[in-house]
Length: 142
Image (spheres, rainbow, N blue to C red):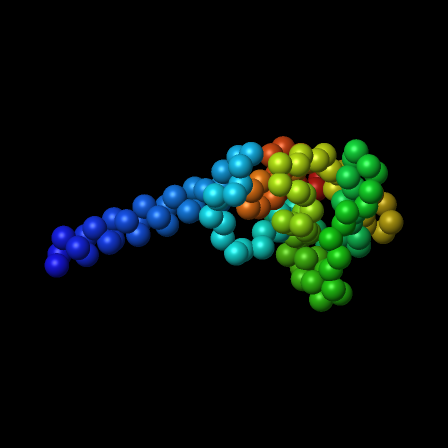
């Protein structure tokens, strides 16, 4: 009985770890990839030099190849929470197709003045979007 339980435990551990690894891989053949059901959003976090959250009045995310505004829509409550935390959505799993790579730009505004401009490279993996280049933690200097 102990041997059967050990075998089941080992098999379960291998399955779970391979599923997690598969979810992280970026392969051309996604048919056999086991993904989680988590809907991923990549965020930009903005703080001042004292590590206090920065409340932007507005922000934009622009696809640099098409010049399209791909800013994720937020409810007023979500935007207010983002201001309190200094976190703003950059992209989500619906922003990029599997295997697609795009270059985007995040722009942050305070009093209608652009105070932040940061470029990113975003990749659509088999399961989730990922940021391959760009700083997700920005410190705004005075």
